Image 1: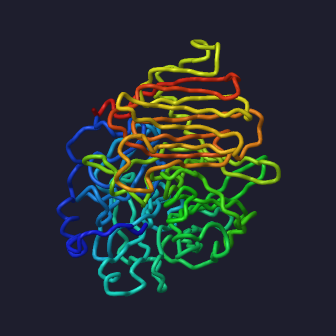
Image 2: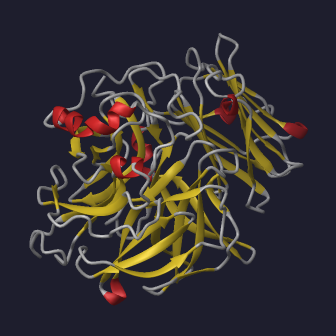
Length: 510
């Protein structure tokens, strides 16, 4: 992904020096107990992070690489940071995986298990992990050229810990397009070839290869589809099944142009024949309507599961948020699925089942207070709230602290929209667009409204109606929120209110 901030001119001339300086260093010394540190979401111990990259599952380990600058808390010469997990919830930060070199910074990309050893970097008995990524040359950009972004590969024969760059990089050369980046690899089994889905300006290019080294442009998609308010970035291509039928899904982020200002990720459902993607509809659909879910992509090599992760921030203010020592987190990992409403297919997402590993034990609030629609309870984040009521009823959830700061989460039946209001949630002064309400339409037509609301120290993610509508937002209270007021309109009653406190994923590291 291309940066969205200004940075010191000196950085462009010294990124190789900084990379050498950082090589061999383990993660910085510190702790995970800061007041604004998320408790169930991954964040780096120190410094700047943005897009998730290179996500691959291999031998029981989920690898998460990410855009990382080890020199400051703002965007700079990009490296691939690295974290690993055995269960998608507990993460261990590893040493930096891939460093900038003479071809440029290491921008976004993906990684796969080369099962057939098509690249020749490993063997069929011991296949390699292969990563593909954009290299961004700042000197070529500064000189006024348009071909300063090219695609390179690297391979790992030790399970993703260390990477060797291919000697003949780049493998996909830029034809003269300024925004030419973020390749995502997919294995297309019928033709036994790899597909690289690449962002090209405001649309997508599909490239194919038999060996991950030599690539051919197959087709392009999206010039007349979806949102074009900003540049397209971080695409993905994967297959999902629904009622016995296979469908292909393309996701792609756009910045700006999101439904609640700034960054967001759209998707298209259709068919892919190894050459061309045909969407069932060219209309814009958002995988997450919130202002803080961007550059999301899926893990590879996870079998029938399709697990998705996004950067939980927005390019409008990502470099200004008031965390100290580090900046930005990831969303909770989400499992993707298809659902049909009427004649239209939609992409839904829910927190991965492994989140239950953190459950301290649910509390049925209906048993504690079953007499009315209003609940008042002391809380301690993180927690997961599961709610059900009739869909013709408004509801409002207010979480607050003793500093008179509060966050509103709700549903308005008349407009058929969910909302999050963070205007009084704490620190909001750092960017004018941070203040206000975010909205998301209700897509489901079911008579029962069901929600999962995941609240951490500095974020909320709403998953409505089985994840058909998702709304994610960050916030920054002066002190943690400790009280919850939950109310339901029309004098009606809830059919489910389950409060599930969650353990911190950093417990072993604090």
